[in-house]
Figure 1 (tube, one colour):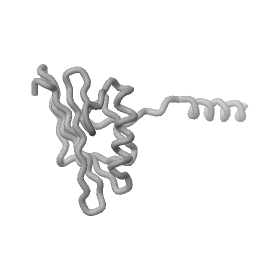
Figure 2: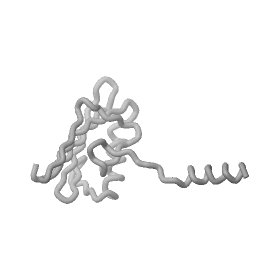
Figure 3: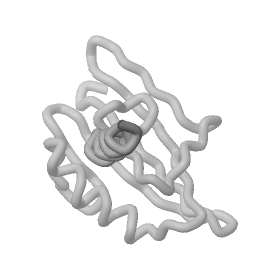
Length: 117
């Protein structure tokens, strides 16, 4: 009986879906595992006219190329089209990613705006 319970517990853990992390304020923008939000600099607003998101994420281990590749591969599956390097559009929204390095940290700035904003 205990062996069966252990088997079912193991099977449940193996097959249960893993909840993906999303950028705070944007439940439809995935967050890479090794990116951490810089809370003091991030903000988001939702209004009837659309939404605005400014999110700063940082990493000690990722490179700009790794982040760019992740979003180039991930965002199209969520309906985003890359219109130029690190600029994506979906419906009436535009997502821009910009990068900088500071003291060994990669800082990624996510800016999401509705066309009307």
